[in-house]
Image (cartoon, rainbow, N blue to C red):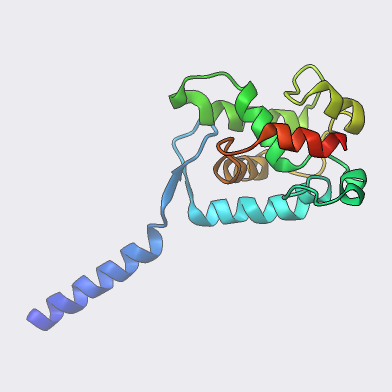
Length: 163
């Protein structure tokens, strides 16, 4: 009997550990949850779709700066995080909503980027044909967690773009 109990406990623990990925709040106005696997998928989609234009690191020299098609993502996220005004409880949801909306329906009026960045790069083209809303939700959650505004020296990023 003791052996059966141990086997049952082991089996239950194994099933539970396989199905209970760390859950993260899914910010698409539903009660569903994102798992770590979803966030990894968001990173994968970001790397496949978004890095065609957005760098994931600061340019290290003038040649790299001049070849950029769009601002580096950490600068974009700095402005989005800074520009979206909400209480701390609502902030993540509003940032996610903004990213999802802006990627499909971009405009200079909605943009949080500085005028110089829009002048240099233009308004981002709509990605409606390139990425689904569902995939954007995964990407936006990944970006929100990966690129918080803390410890970003905006003056240095701005200087890099101007040089």
